[in-house]
Length: 276
Image (cartoon, rainbow, N blue to C red; front, side, top):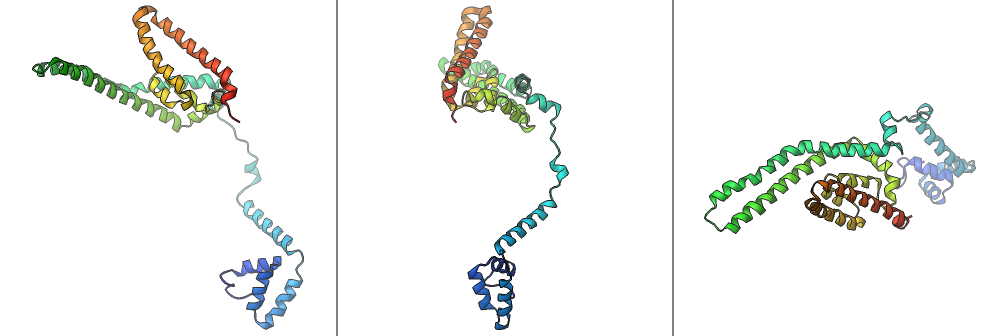
């Protein structure tokens, strides 16, 4: 075999191709050999039988030897055991109420870091009194615009910043520990009926605390449902002004109707929403 190979091809590659009976490679090798070595090379090639099969088997034997150094039979036969929490979290029966409980608990805990920021925003409307005193010389409608519109807008913006910060912090921790994947696994069969992934249950539950996060997290196909959720807030405010102490019962009734609507939608349109 020529020292240094031929045209950038190594001796090992050339020998393997010649062993397989590659005519082009054999011709190039013969041309590069001295006359005294060509006869020996031809004799060696003539002694080869089933070179392709033999070389292919040798390659598989080489691969098996490499794998034998990295994979052992004892490790391959070991069974994976789940922790007690994982067994409960992924259980079809107990996993769902556990997920709802943890999501609601996370929603409550999100107000812990959010409360200081929300309290800071609550001090903004208190600036209305000194502003009325300082700007008493300007028209009253300008003062009302500043104290009732601008200050309340700033208060709402700061309060929502606090809530968004708290919710992202708490639910980010829940996601980092891997529990969001378990929630998605548990609710996948149910949410698939609405052409959603299992993790879509999270916006539904978070909507109990803030419909903004729920509407933003839902699938675009449920845009009508998000609109209904926004209108539900206005209807609830009107109901409270009309029914006073009985308003909570009306709110519960509205939630029951909304839940019934979700069930009927899943039953009627579920097969059409799910694509193969």
